[in-house]
Image (cartoon, rainbow, N blue to C red; front, side, top):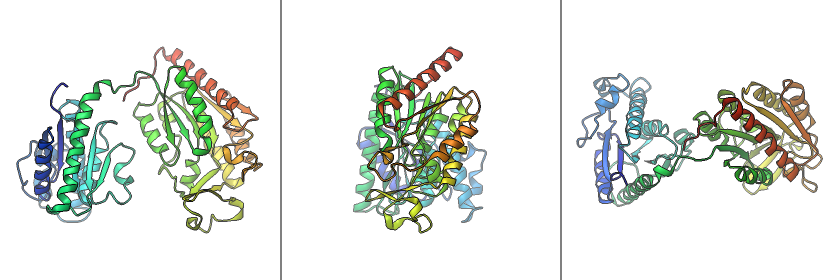
Length: 425
């Protein structure tokens, strides 16, 4: 180990100073060093930090004194929080790049969580980051985004120390210390030695994906599988970050989930990262016909209609069928995004079923999805290879064809660039 792990303890030392002092002491007792960064804007810090709030504000050209005189609302505290969050992000990135810290820990209520999460989630994938938050029992996506940041439920408000809060904060300190120790031990081995290939997957496309994965791994690739339940957003984020070197977009239900506000809405338009990066790409419209809600009684009335042919996937998830008009629109969308992807690319159709719902004996067996295929065919640019097989998406023959299509695109890209795409952890 190069040095004793250092946990960066970041947050508002004016309003949460006693709590931060307690956590600082817990971290030291756990055997790690502590570097404290203050991001408070209301008053003087409860104790002296290693990096003061004035420095944090100054990183984005702001004057802390102006914030200290501020008021509540969009022009006051909200602006101060967002500005300090941007400054803290720069400070933390510097500390990580300089190798001075091994984890980051913070705590807060609504405002503090907003400030801290905006700074934490931009740190590198794999770098330990933890927030103890009163918002952790609610929807955490606005805070976590596409990152691997952890959030722990504070249970009590972070406003004074008591038997419950001490236990929660002590656990958080020990967790951060453990992650810092682990990070120091493993970071030298963290970088991938093989190209990382992403594949999107649903439960009903799993057999095909696992067949492709096995063949890719046997051919020297490392495979990252993304569950198409909204995690496609994280996949696209990693593609944009340069972590992913190639993509087999095998499962696309998130497109119509986004349109119809299903529970697997990724919160963004899918298939754009390949356009921005030009990585080798094979697209299969797996499960593109499908969007999802929770139990049957949670389906909005406008969608709970006979034409949707609702499937109870499990007690917590229902699957709904796209209409012919939606299938046509999906085909146009998919073709347009493939057309605009500048790297080597191909498309494959499983004409006998987009997922296991189409297997004989299953509810959507025989359902006509030709509007989807027709729209892709008619809108796909000349010169882009389109392979159509009379297979279900999960048949081995289809999976093997997709693997071969990707291998050809990968080799084409590598030969033209004379390099293998860089991969980082």
